[in-house]
Image: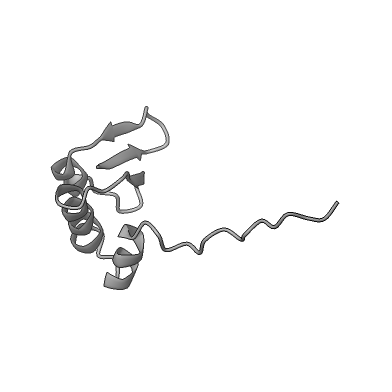
Length: 84
């Protein structure tokens, strides 16, 4: 699922999940655009996110790959029992 929020700073923000609407928003410095990629589904969600990041926003292919991989962060450190 892709969700976007657009604000120009003076009006109430506009929210949409429609990819076509996001593609049409012109944000040439006139407004702020926040895009959330929430739990991309393997078939549909990833294709939408890939199109949006790679083609609409022209992100570098490696940045797109990193953004769509859920486990890019290192695992948390192991917690060891401390002697009492």
